[in-house]
Amino acid sequence: MSRRFTIALGIVFGLLGLFVAVGLWAVPDRQLLPTGPMTVVSETWVLETPDRQDWLADTPVPRRFPVQAWTPSAGRGPVVVFLHGTQGRRHAYLTWIHELASHGYTVVAADHPPVALLPNFPDGTSAPPSSAWSDLLRRATDPPSFVIDPVFLKAHALVADDVRAILDDLPSRLGVSTDRVLLAGHSFGGGLATTLCDEEPRCAAIINLDGPPFADPALAPVQAPLLVVLAGRTRTARALDVVWEPIDGMIREAAGPTLVVTMPRTGHLELSDLGLLIRPALLRLVFPGSQFGPGPLEPKLRAVAAVSVAFADRHLRGDAAVAPEAVVAQHVDLELVHR
View 1: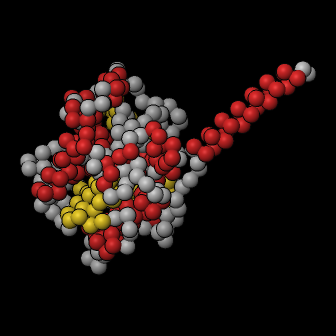
View 2: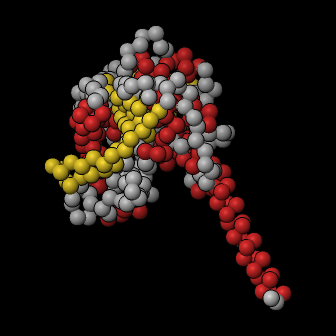
View 3: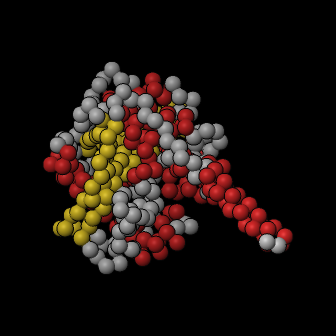
């Protein structure tokens, strides 16, 4: 073996080792364990609704999407439905989901094509392609026009119908009651949970994690108990003012019990588990500074989950002894804005 070949081989293996090391660093295997007293079990299925068409698909087909439920081992509790953000998926919110389930709630979340990140299904396949949605994402440099685009509004309506289908299906599938449920979500999902609740008689409370409602709050003020968690760094990004202004209107016009907390050092994407799946240092290079704030992610995720559990205990379970405001005071990353 020549010296030149040996050197070349060493360089190849050295680069390969570097790539592996960077990959292991960039994609850590991190998951926060829930703090609740109950063990969490999970099951997944594909919900098919033959009477509904997936009208955003290139070739309209009957609507089908994957759904997952996390339930406490001690028995199925009150139902919470969680909605992911644009280009998100249910597994990006496991800290929040596991925490609620470990405190006795049945938490249900789905991947909603085409809003969800591909692939969508448990077997690694994806929903039919949607060129209209892909084109919309490529044009998404102007947030105000993005959220009023007809394709975006169709996606909004499509996912809202998914939620209704889930609520119709759960009693027979899991043996749970959906007479009183809590709708929650992040970003796109938080906004949808808010606007859908007043149209859905089974909705008893809302948790909105930094999600613009995409509706005029003066026309349909929120009636149900509402928790809003605001990412402070995102709201200081002036380019997004037009998108986040509806949240202020929603809070101002809300007719029911309303608790608003802000996280001044937190960016929009830190309300998901993305920073546990990919190193925050790498994400800060990829995303604008408003999306990821300074400091460790874990306490922020714990804080959001803790105030969410307290809010659900108060307004879904009806435990009047629970004070979500007291939970806010226990976490340095949370600041009470309005109650």
